[in-house]
Image (cartoon, rainbow, N blue to C red; front, side):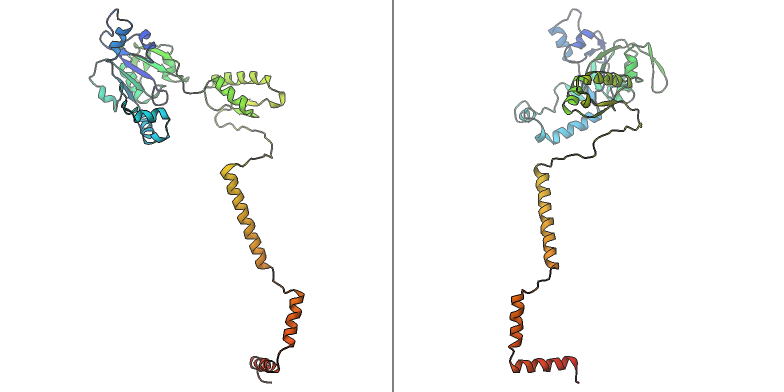
Length: 318
C-alpha cells in the first residue's frame, strides 16, 4: 500500500485465493481467469492487469528519494549504475493522476489508494464507485480504527452511507490483510527493557489496544527489581501527566561538543586574564624608584634652570 498504509481497491471479478498469493490482490472484470486455470495460468492472466497507485503523498515522497539518491543504500545506488535501469521507474505499477482517468474504463485493474481508513480522499471515492458491484473487491491493508468505514467493512455490512448522504448497497468482496509499518509489542518491550525508563506514557493508538498494551507491560515489568519498575499511563488528549525524576543529572559531553566547549572556556579565561592585566597598575620596584630619585638628584645646574623657567611659564609670574 502507498501513502501511509492506504487501502487496496479493485475492480473486476475477485478470487481471495489468488489475492492471497503474489503479495496483494488481483482484480478482473468479465469472468476473471479462465475456469480451471491454476498455478502459472492465473499468473499469466494477472500479468496483464494494470496496477495503479493513486497517492499525491507517495508521488512527492518518491521525488525526495530521487533527489537524495546519494543518501540511499548501496543496493539502490548500484541499480542506478547498471543496465537494470532506474529503480524508481516501476515496471508494473503506474501513477494514477486523477480518478477521472478511469471513467469509461471497464477493464480489470488494481488501484493502490489512500487513506487506508476510507474516510475520505481517493480511496473513498473509488470505493463508493465500485462497492455495489459483486465483481469488485476492496482489500484493507493494515489496522482499521474504530469509527471508520474500514472498520465497519470488516463486519461486511449490506449497505454503507456515502459522503453525500446516499445509501449504497455493499456487494463487493471485503478482504483484510495484516500489514503494518508500526512496531509490535515485542519490539516496544525490547526498547523499554533496554532503556529502563522511570515512566512510560502511551500516547498513540486506539484506547482498547493501548489498555491491552499497558496491562501486558505492567505484567512483564513485575520481573524487574521493584525499584526499577516504571509507571505506565494512558492519558486522554489534553490530560496533564506528572513525571517525577531526580533534579540533578550527570551529562557527558563528547566529541565536537566537548571540543567546542573547551575552546570557549580557554577564550573566556584568556579574555579575563587580559582585562585583569589592564586594570593592574604597573608600579616600579623599590630599587627602580631609588634609581629614579638618584637620577633626579644628579640633574645639572643648567637642567635645573630650564625646569624652573618652564615651571614659571606654566604657573605665571609671581
